[in-house]
Amino acid sequence: MAILRIPTPLRPYVEGKSEIPVRGETVSDALASVTGQYPDLRTHLFNQEGQLRTFVNLYVNEEDIRNLSGLSTPIRETDRLLLIPSIAGGSR
Image 1 (cartoon, helix red, strand yellow):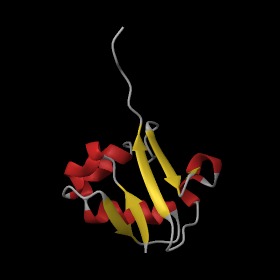
Image 2 (cartoon, one colour):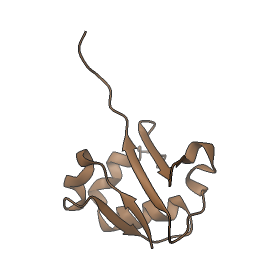
Image 3 (cartoon, helix red, strand yellow):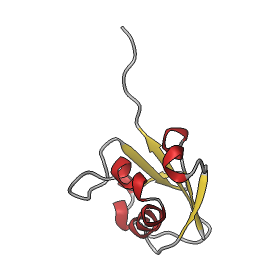
Image 4 (tube, rainbow, N blue to C red):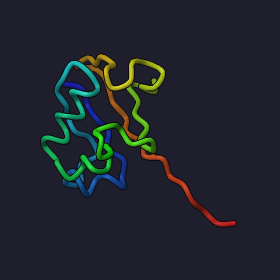
C-alpha cells in the first residue's frame, strides 16, 4: 500500500499520524482514501470546487505531481506521497 506523509500542521486532522497507508491507483484515489478516513482533512486540501488548493504541494516519491499527470498520476504500492502545504508570511 502506498504511504502518504502528513506534515506537522495537518496532523491534528489525522489523529496525530505522520504517515497513513492509502489505497488507489492514482493520486486522486489516494486522497479520496485518506479524506474518507479523515473527513476534516478535506477542507485543508481541496477548495469548494473540489480542486486541490493552490498552496498544497504533492509529490510522488520526489516528483511534483504538477510535472507528472496531476491528480491522475498513477501510483504503485511502493510509492511514498509527500504532502507539503506552502507556508507564507514573515516579517519585514
